[in-house]
Amino acid sequence: MQAWPHFPDEETEDAWPRSPCRGKVLSTLPPRRFVPLHGGLATEPWPENATLYQQLRGEQILLSDNAASLAVQAFLQMCNLPVKVVCRANAEYMSPSGKVPFIHVGNQVVSELGPIVQFVKAKGHSLSDGLDEVQKAEMKAYMELVNNMLLTAELYLQWCDEATAGEITHARYGSPYPWPLNHILAYQKQWEVKRKMKAIGWGNKTLDQVLEDVDQCCQALSQRLGTQPYFFNKQPTELDALVFGHLYTILTTQLTSDELSEKVKNYSNLLAFCRRIEQHYFEDRGKGRLS
Amino acid sequence: MAAPLELSCWGGGWGLPSVHSESLVVMAYAKFSGAPLKVNVIDNTWRGPRGDVPILTTEDGIVSQPAKILNFLRKQKYNADCELSAKQGADTLAYIALLEEKLLPAVLHTFWVENDNYFTVTKPWFASRIPFPLSLILPGRMSRGALNRILLTRGEPPLYHIQEVEAQIYRDAKECLNLLSNRLGTSQFFFGDTPSTLDAYVFGFLAPLYKVRFPKVHLQEHLKQLSNLCRLCDDILGSYFRHGPMGISPAGPEMIDVNLRKLTQLVNKESNLIEKMDDNLRQSPQLLPRKLPTLKLTPAEEENNSLQRLSP
Image (cartoon, rainbow over all chains, first blue to last red; front, side, top):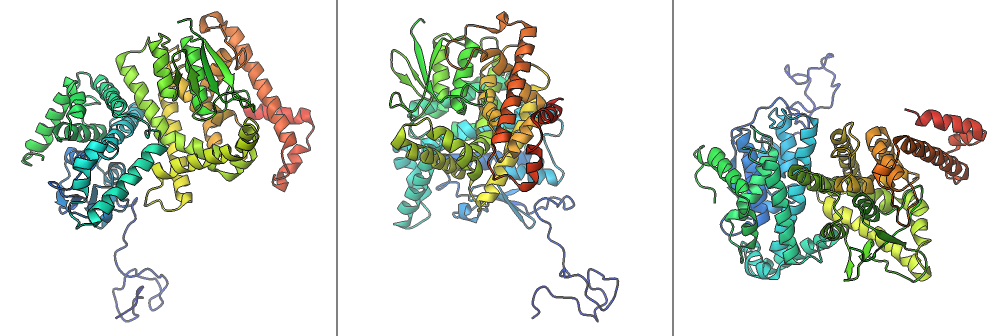
């Protein structure tokens, strides 16, 4: 049993790296494949067994996490990269940043859409290469708009609105755990989310104001989309994946009231957009219905 | 509407009508849309509100956050966005979200969290404008609020140390400034020749960063390299805040001669130079020893040096 790092013995002929002076160990690198760090891995192709982890689809996952997971799945589909979706109850704790979804590719673990987009770009696949500087700035700005308004509104609705929190969120969030852990974890998460809402100034907003903000955001997205098939005309980009993830989840999730999905349904081009991406990237590829 | 609208906000300094970003956004929007606002600067008497500034007092009540104040002004028919198309309106919302997510943490950090800046510039300035017992409490509370906001929105794992969070937020802020600069290009304002809500927000966030003299300045240096953003701030300051930060200025863009505007900008640059000279001469002994030789220059040579640094 050799301790690591194990220096190559002088007798072995093919110790790696080959030092110019045989018999003397010049480098302390262990003789095994150098594991590249997050930025320098352009040489490895996308493996077949890439997996995406999220929480349990039927009982546990919440609106905002489902939206994020769907956005990543849509993005990977658009890049033509196969990925298997695995549901685990403790996905949130497995993730390196505490957020779902995260992907496990080769020996790298990357979470959240932003870092995943950069990771995939380092592998050589990118959806936004054809955009010029101004369009890239717009794309980033719209992604921030979706994160700022839609995601925050979803979090508010799940955790700060008493009706939804009591009936749906607490039950779902704590479902894999025994009593009293389910209550404790749910209250802890609620406290964290409320603290964050207060820090960004959403603590005093009423539900109506939040729904108005969602409406404004959808109006902006609808005006930007116009009559085009995707946000930047012919080709989808990560912005399309993100918007699809959030809007599809809002439209298909049943909450205590339908107000949120009604706000989105007011804009017919957004509905057509979601339908188009669902048909093109999910049903046609034989993935079956999205839950 | 002829009803008087009163805005309470923090006062100005370093050539700006207000040092507080949100107050500046509201003031700039009011100038662009022609709304008659009476500006009440918060001073160190007990008169007037102090929390949640800026606050608009109307005859119906009080409106408090910048987004709500702007909505209120729009409903009163003071709209700076009437010439924008629907797509440009959508772009405005998106860029404002970008500013709040990427640039605001770094601005908050520069003003309130960075120790050198906070103790030498921000805290004395705010404390001098708050009446006595509160001046010991309020700046500290505002600083803790800013740190809280940064940590809660950005400080999640894997960024475990405050230094890594700082590095990340400054990187994001520089990227955001570059994106804004790319979007502005060579046009005068973001959407053509007349300023709009987006210009008000960009001015509100960038002008304090641009003008206030801080000891630790690397974000300011980055901003100064993006000359079109600096030109935007100077243009707005020169054209809309020429008559002084307080009181109602009836001059609109149509009434200002182009030459007069250029002259005003030159005068502003000169007064900035003189302020810089003043600050350099008065700077505290915390300076590194090797900077002292430049202080010993005669004022004329120093002005020449500053001129050379500023000229494009």
